[in-house]
Image (cartoon, rainbow, N blue to C red; front, side, top):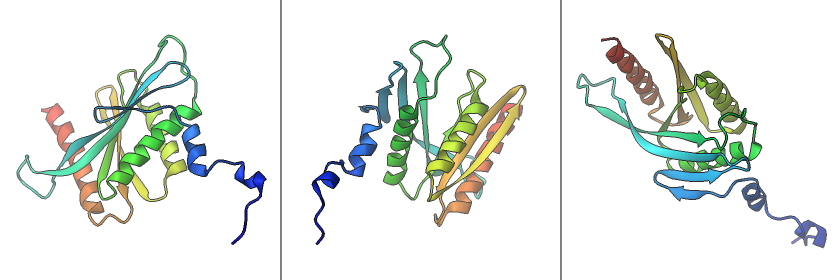
Length: 183
């Protein structure tokens, strides 16, 4: 057995280093709240979601999935938001905790477009996903309806036995939603 020198013992374990780079999380209904250094309040959540089953003629047949996401209430909405590495790390930490808790499930992510920045959110989320992901694949969609673009994605573990069914259900659900809006 090799003994560590005092100098090597000085460094905290990696898990502690990771936690030091996160904001304090407060449990909330379906997720967690945190406030960043700028005073912006985030809510990171997970909720049950039903994808329409494309194999069923019955419009009420669903395949269980989850929806994950986050919202931000800016402390000063008139100022341009600045990039905050610690907010990113905190959001990704919570997402990873959710995904690790339900490894056989699919996760739908929808980009909020109330402020017209959904495309920016999709690009940011894709970059985060590609930086941090090793076990999941992402399938995304952009739907244009009138002058509004709607961006979403589904995350599925690469080895999921139901992967193709979940992907089909995701795209089928989006198509049915678009059809319903056009009627």
